[in-house]
Length: 277
Ligand code: ATR
Image (cartoon, rainbow, N blue to C red; front, side, top):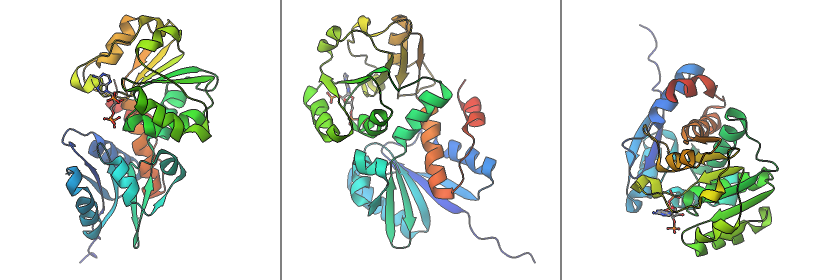
């Protein structure tokens, strides 16, 4: 009789909602490529159930979790130790369970930077960058974005006070010019525009001025869909040089989480080719 094989290591994504997540497929492809024995589940938990869901998964032998909307700040609070990006963002998308302790990391920002600079070959250093939205997604991006040394970073939000609070939180990391969507008309055009609002998820497209975009602009929507997102449709209609959805960031942040958990970084190129047309 062959020796019984140990059970595969268990990972999961916790969020609300999570049913349509592509993360299980992405991690399954990474595991196959790097020959890791692991499973990756989806756990839907409302905010009141978040901590119970995490501790329950850990108690059941789970090794780590990805965390998505709306739990990233609760995950920061739950983790005992933090990687630098998580500490700066005060938000966590990757939990790692070790004996007695939970470590929190944030791979969203590095995933975004890799997709823009490596996959799309766009320089952030020296670029005029516009970030639209001041919610949880923006919180994860600001540290790595400022570290990439853009020439300037404008942060615009429907609710200006939220953008101003983020500017103050990140003041030690670099200068952020905060304004409303209406004020954007006076800011000229941008090399890189990033949509980090959730407006598109509700099928909405805020009234951004057309003057933001030129034929050289690179427009990046953190949202992704099998159809065109409203922001990508808008950016293309304004004549943007390039307008892309956030599929690449989704894959890159997953690869960073996988590397933290498994100690091996998957090659994302074939996975991108498979998932992103
Ligand atoms: P997430 O974690 O996905 O970033 P969030 O923290 O709720 O979610 O933030 C959502 C962001 O999208 C915010 O910047 C929000 O603007 P407000 O701070 O003014 O609420 C923005 N947003 C959502 N719907 C929007 C809409 N219809 N028009 C413009 N901005 C919108």
